[in-house]
Structure formats: structure tokens, C-alpha cells
Image (tube, rainbow, N blue to C red; front, side, top):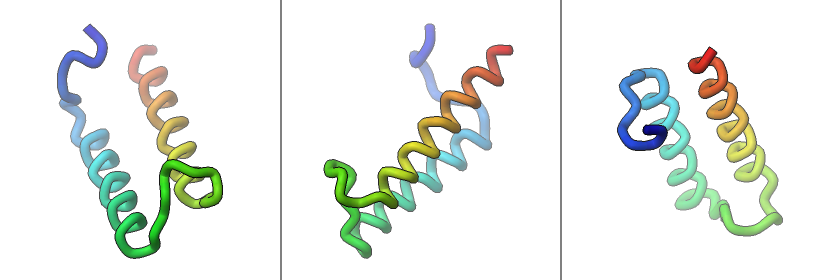
Length: 62
């Protein structure tokens, strides 16, 4: 069942940890807000991560 368990891929876990670290550091140090549209850097990071996740999912299913 999709979404039922954790990923076994070390690469996916590492990317997730890096993205989470960037989000926390950006929020605490730079004051990034991930709820508004005034900050383009957090939005760009979110878009890149979302596109990468979709691409990885499509690649792994083929």
C-alpha cells in the first residue's frame, strides 16, 4: 500500500534529512516563513523538493 511504510532507500532518507535541516536552519536563523508567498527562497526549495520527489517516484515505478 503506498505511503504505508518507511522508505528503505538510504538516498531518499538522506535527502529528507538534508531538506529538513535546511528548513529548520532557514526558519531559526533567517526567519523564513513557509506559510506565505513573500519569501521566494523557501518556495523555490519546496518546489525543487516536490518535483524531485515526483520524479523519483515515477523513475522507481518504471
